[in-house]
Amino acid sequence: MLLGLDLGTAGAHAVAIDATGASVASAFSEYGTHSPRPGWFEQDPADWRRAALQVLAGVAAAVRGEIRGLGLTGQPGCVFVDGRGEPVRPAIVGGDQRAASQAGRINDQMGAQRLIEISGGPALAGHHAPLIRWLRDVEPVQFRHTRRVLLPKDQVRMMLTGEAATDATDAAGTLVQDLRTRTWSDELLGALEVPVEWMPPVHESAHVAGGLRPSLAVSLGLPSGLPVAAGASEAAAAAISFGVVTPGPVGSTIDRAGLLYARIDGIVTDAGGIIQTACAPAPLCYDLLGTTPSAGGSLRWWRDVLRWRLGYEALCAPAEFVAAGADGLIFKPHIDGQGGAFVGLRAHHVQADLTRAVMEGVVFSLRARLDVMRALGVDMHQVRATGGGSRSRLWRQIQADVFAMPVAAMTSTPSPALGAALLAGVATGVFSDVPAASERVVRLDNVIEPDPERAARYQQLYRTFTTLDSAIREPAIR
Image 1 (cartoon, helix red, strand yellow):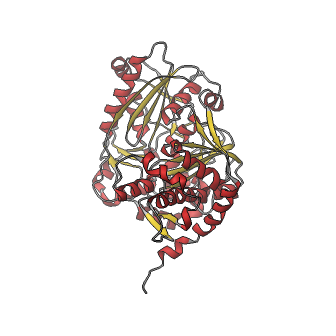
Image 2 (tube, helix red, strand yellow; image 1 turned 90 degrees about the vertical axis):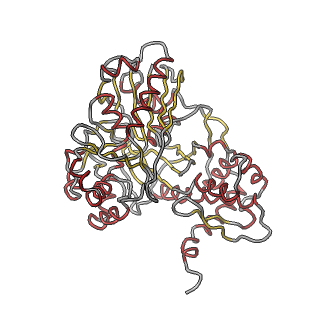
Image 3 (cartoon, one colour; image 1 turned 180 degrees about the vertical axis):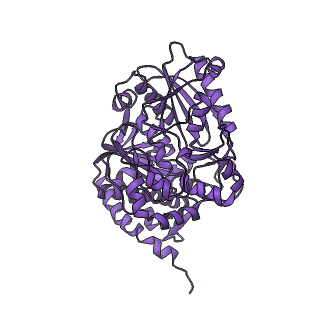
């Protein structure tokens, strides 16, 4: 048996799988997110500890047979801890924008191109380096007490094993990783004044990075010293569970945000900074990630505007009978993923038209990332849809037509926790490598082919979509 633990945005999810990859137990425990100021998102690491112990004990009690290993994954975030390993303040988690000004100053100081060349992308507000500077600027007392900076899953790892460690995929969220050496960059650490001692040792994802503490093993019902794999970022772990582990398939996730994920051989970077390059959960392999906040959050905004209470399926059903292009209506999602602009709105448009336009606008925003990947020479022949959007056949069909590629859904249920469990299997010798592990669980179904007529129509609309930013931002009155 193998265990996987995901410290997600909404709660902790643990799964247990057998050597065939079949899931035999699962548990989930929720925790909350706090927003003390607009654009700030925080969680209490004590909630992670409680939830992690609860779900691990739950799956351990539900399985029979030897448990060989545990893999970890988790949401992006930043935890500042003191010399005892205790957090000095609440954890800052994904989507937080408090360090936007610090990120801008780092881009100016280092040069965005140099940052992209070394770390795979420009400085963003959620990276550890800008957040370290924010802590220094705004909370100097907490800064003085900080001795290490960890990601959420690695804070839980320290609790489980007593070891400070991270993996090469999650190190991409720090801005101080060197893609080529797959460890910390002396140049970036020095220039950004980040003490090297603050950064944990970096392991490959499928390496063992500690063993379960005996004191916890008894209470959890798990073997003492149980091998704990280094694990991977949520995006990388999820990709293992839906089979994006070799060049060719592209993962497309539509949840609150949107994500395109592709595997590449060698290192390629996007000079424009739209696509991030990150280490993959296999040695010498790399991934391209194109993120957009304009995904499920836009549809949720539209639902809330309508005060809709019947669920997303009922909201989207009438849009299936609207022709591609929503009768001349285009939706341009807002940059923060909350709301947007309807362009071409006329009196004859009905609710179904607007709903379809929102769905098409979200996919157009993903198409912009896909085009950058294509320009970088990425080999792609199929999209694998995951997330909440994958449950909608209409959204999958729109992706097939807009991307001009087949879109497949999963008969299996992909998840970061499942990917983490598979990594534990590679780390402990149950599977020979990451592709072999992924092959055990990936089951494709409902492949939707692009419709040539709609694809041609969407190509015309997409060209219009790409010109709207400047027009929408132009003030109406001078």
